[in-house]
Image 1 (cartoon, rainbow, N blue to C red):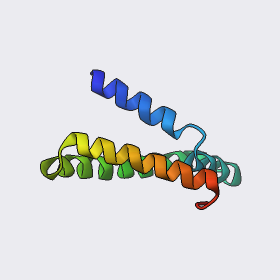
Image 2 (image 1 turned 90 degrees about the vertical axis):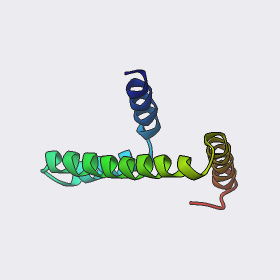
Image 3 (image 1 turned 180 degrees about the horizontal axis):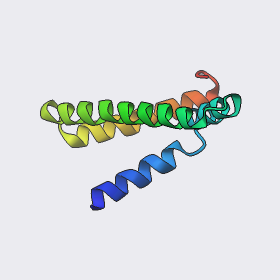
Image 4 (image 1 turned 120 degrees about the vertical axis):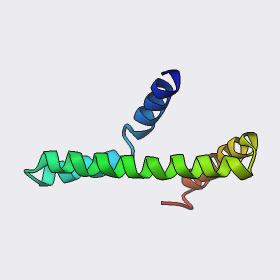
Length: 89
């Protein structure tokens, strides 16, 4: 149960205010079918989460978890620097 709550909180907070949420708000504002927008965006998030879970599960069979964590942290730092420097949209 702890893993479920931690995962929910991390994903929920990470998704607040990001480009995906802004695009979903724009779609909802442009249509009268807000429930279809909700269902579509919920299914898309579930599908992308499934890909992440499967990939993470497979990666740990070949690469130690601490290496994956370090590489992920470094990737986020590099992306952050590129975003701040204007090299990435």
